[in-house]
Length: 364
Image (cartoon, rainbow, N blue to C red; front, side, top):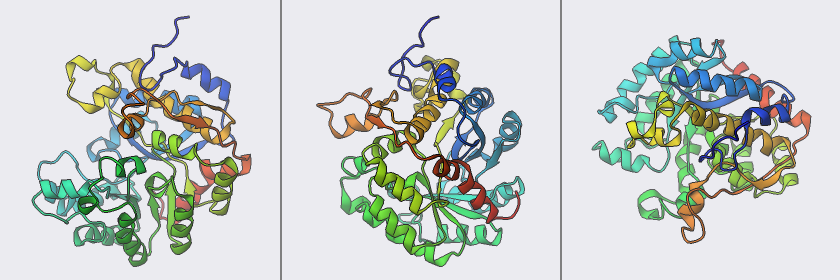
């Protein structure tokens, strides 16, 4: 049998189908609460990865116009999360009154969560829109969306901060972007103001600092975290001692939800030379590479949470090169150190926490 070709999602030439068989089924069917599933053919490739790695259902930030098609392609194993139209040229409308209209339409299609993206790059996005500050998480534009979410009995998901590696590089200008800690003041204000369940994506934006997350969760009983963003999570969780990480998850059991942050697009199945400028195309350029892209995330995450594996990740992590270009090239990868979580904690993390969170909301 020909060995799989290596690519950024498969540096070591793993056969992700064989690896899924080696892992076996998870302790419980997984609910992935943080994905971005779009495309038609890409959905079919992704569904195979779901089936192989024991993922029963996904919650997805799918474009409004594709919700029905994706639901059909995933055979109903899908719940949409409301997101604005990031492609719209009029960003002030798309993130303001246009988003309010889309939230109501998403709700009609079964969405129960509204997403507000508030990475430090909102400074740039707002300036490009000619309205500096209008996308602050505690600003009136965002508050209007949160009020509507509450009126519709919907939960709120936020992206608050980005990796420490980016604050050392992309956001080194603290006068412009603020420090990492600065990102959380507006977030905590809206957590106090809106009495609805919240999910802070990507381990609250700070998987590097479990002590900070302890305090954040202690201060806000309506807050939950999802453990999505595979490269970021693998890199930073692997740096924690397994006992410390297990204690953290046990202390907040039911409030930390499994997520992957997998993005699927039909562009992933298109040869790169057809659209070489498209960043999404560069992540994969064929059906085989798309499969590696999607399956690698589930392989890496299940290996991280379930096993005692200790080796380089098969997924390239360009943040290593970003921080230290003299030592690393963009295809280098960090250590993937398995946490070997106990089965009862895995069951809660993989499924029960999502079911409990869903139970806080009206039926889809």
